[in-house]
Image 1 (cartoon, protein in one colour):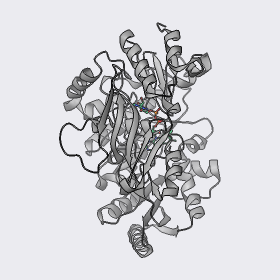
Image 2: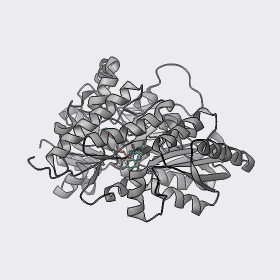
Image 3: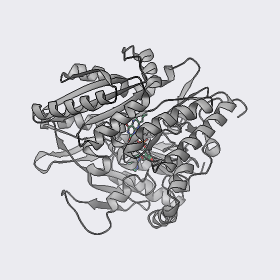
Image 4: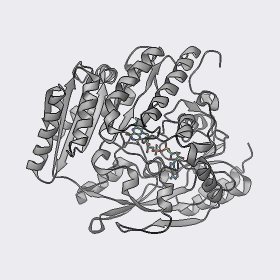
Length: 477
Ligand SMILES: Cc1cc2nc3c(=O)[nH]c(=O)nc-3n(C[C@H](O)[C@H](O)[C@H](O)COP(=O)(O)OP(=O)(O)OC[C@H]3O[C@@H](n4cnc5c(N)ncnc54)[C@H](O)[C@@H]3O)c2cc1C
């Protein structure tokens, strides 16, 4: 390990450096299957500290991996070559809330739910809402271009970012974007940083659009005996011009897991659709809900219930919110792995995609689930497998490749919202082959020494299984 701990201690103070074995293990993995060992974890509090850390790392050619909550699912913050984990969670101040300008300014380590709690008394909310909002930081959401349950109506993080302050690889502090709703010309570099997964700059502050809280929210659930019919209902709701503020799919694997883990008593069917409409006028919300209900019924949806009551809404939605953790309870001995984890497909192919996931799983001896923010085209899967068995990794490897080949074939994308990092990179590189060299040129221009989150996205290895250690005791490895 070639690192000057004294210099880092001078920058952030001894208490904000972590390098014991337990911390290095924890910070070496995220919500993905990968693990590697960083050299040290550094926790800055101020912009000037981030600048000094980057100046030092750039001089010494030390990798720096910006990290929020570490909830990335594809190995985003896994330090392939070691180096410094730059833990941004201490930079967690909400700097200003400006209702008149419909914006707020926050430090990058602010947690999404904390921001929303602070906005509520002002009558506003910040809409991207990934299912991980309880822990995910604004910096991590921007770097991943996260989206979530309400993106079907309010867009992804990209649509909410007005501007930001970033520290470049050489330590320079740069202001990007504006405080205004429109900004027309020149290269929109703040947009380039959105989705850059910590490879181009460290986000230290963000200026974000906020949205007035709707007066009414109504959430409902519909059951389907056929997964494809649920997929078709979702496609039809979207193409009908209805405006749901949430349109989520959960298949039978997801329903079983959630019922086992949380005892929620969700219906024992092939799929459920959870839908929501919101607005300032109750009649308008009623109208949207009735349209969604009619479309679900047209596709044989039944048992349709809905409620305006906040407690009842939370109860219906609880299973979806806690799904990722619940999936490991599906069957004794099977773990939920984030592989072939996320994709987006054209609206008309939602039902085909859901069906394909189950076909591929069956053929490859694994269990897979189909769920997601399907109203905005996002489909998630997880592979439930025995991760201690080497042959299951081979099964998973085949299943993942088949899933992403199909996604490409039907005109979808490997990158919906969970990012690319390591696990999804081989497939994303095929999809984006025409622009990889442009991306490499941009990376070289902004980070010539390749210190910022190296070996991710277009520079990630081609085989996710061997790219890092897997964080499971795999037989023979
Ligand atoms: C249970 C669960 C549910 C999830 N649901 C969703 C979902 O619904 N929608 C969704 O989009 N994602 C979801 N995710 C994935 C993930 O939580 C989000 O993408 C989230 O935005 C990541 O935030 P984070 O703070 O954990 O970032 P991290 O995982 O710490 O980092 C993510 C990436 O951002 C970079 N980064 C972090 N902070 C900065 C910074 N300040 N400057 C520059 N780069 C930075 C990192 O280097 C890394 O590449 C889920 C994850 C889990 C575990």
